[in-house]
Length: 358
Image (cartoon, rainbow, N blue to C red; front, side, top):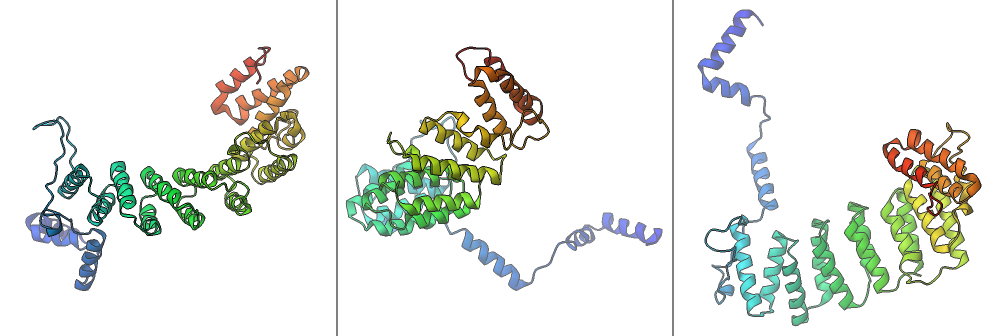
């Protein structure tokens, strides 16, 4: 491009706004009329039109109750949409009248779609279902896609517990939980609900439950939620009933296999410590195993800081091995976990305290 052409281009841009716009828009992709229509229709499908009740004959007998924000000029009123504000006004009115009806169910569904975290709406929906004697399985069918749209929501899972508890059967719940965990395998709400199912329906000794937990760990050995569920299933939820020696040994060997797959994964190390505590076994029970991954005499051959931590505890239990415990903690502080150096130094200082374990 010659100097003269460049000057001409610059002059046209500054002297003609229309030309400037053409230059800018030329870089954007163009759409055909059909593509523009399809894009507009897709947007409309994503955003349904607002729904109002003041012009609905089915609600003409109800006078909505406005929200009291503290007078004419509230200090920090929430900027609700007009649609949400009106729907809540009608909900307050039917709640004041203790109305339980089909239209109330529809109203609660509408509000939940706008604000699924509104616990009062869920509670009134539950009361309405009970008062009308609605089939509880129908509510679960409606609840499933709602939960899938709102993965991190306390209220949905409390409502589900209420319905399943009333149904008295966990049929189909394991499959739905698995579907939820496909979207987020560490969803706290889903795992908590799974534990509730185990306790409510006494699934502790159900083989399928332990097999499912194993499949989750096999899929991701670092899934702390799956390890936590296994602990609850095998030990935590049994209300003091001591596990058999067979179960203890099975869990120790299972955990060892998982550690060998990923020695620096903290989850199975924590699980192993929990098994030893429940079985009232000393940590020295697994000394030789921990030594496979850490040797204080060979500082360059440490493959797991968690094994080093465990060995520090084991050495500290033996008065004659306090020096070895100090070496293990020094390695953690200086080489293998320096981000927590102050903690490891504290642990080392505690070794000199006669009744405090490392």
